[in-house]
Image (cartoon, rainbow, N blue to C red; front, side, top):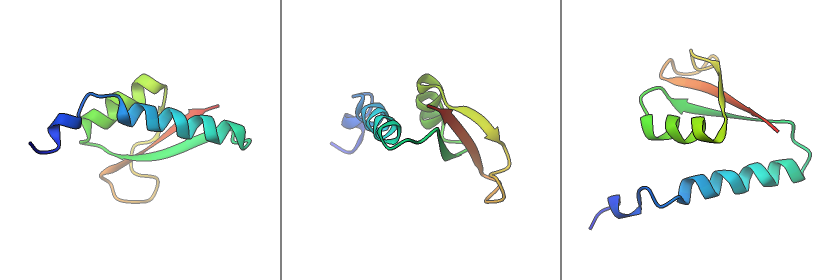
Length: 72
């Protein structure tokens, strides 16, 4: 059966939205995440939610990572 049966069920987006709500309730003003530059499903999810690229070179980390930001 594998893991593919879990794809496209909205689980990741629901978890991300719950984390964003929790951050808002705790007074956060921004959320930052790193995403691998080749992780296209993650890029689509973060783009749909409203994350924007902050740094394309991984913010001093691996050059395979990009830093994204979401303003609350």
